[in-house]
Amino acid sequence: MRPHQIIAAMSQERFDQLLGSLSDINPEVIQGTTAAAAQILKFRPKFLMKQPPAKRMKSIRQAVSRPNANHLAEELLAVYFLKCQLSLLIEWLDLIGLEHEEGILTQDEVPCPEAADLEKKVQQFLGASDGDDRKLLLQVFSGQAAVEWPALDELLATPASA
Image 1 (cartoon, rainbow, N blue to C red):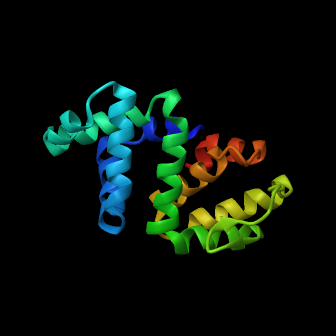
Image 2: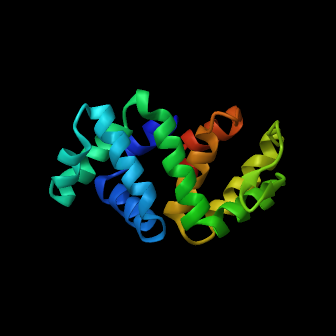
């Protein structure tokens, strides 16, 4: 799934939680996301900012769910894991054996592990607590433009890993 599709598949409540977590840590991200969403929806940013919070969040999610907002969705999800769930991101990257600096990949190419090894590591990662964010992290990781891991896409599409 592409990042905009991940946002589209998310419940509004889950999206609100994600943005709420980001707002607590970095309010500038929300301001930038709101401005970008207004542009995508062809609204004036002030109009979107004056909407009641529930309506504004629904509009932002609607905008970020569009294919032409894929870059914005990817950035929003990346910032969420880098700022709000860094320890979870580092756990995944260390488990899978990818070089990184504080969650940011340092390798130009991101090699996919063997399918059997990948499946074992995905199950191990998903088997721990924080299930919702763990599954979301794997979806976001798989949806990155720099990651071409058909085996991971396949694992995430099967009901056993859901």
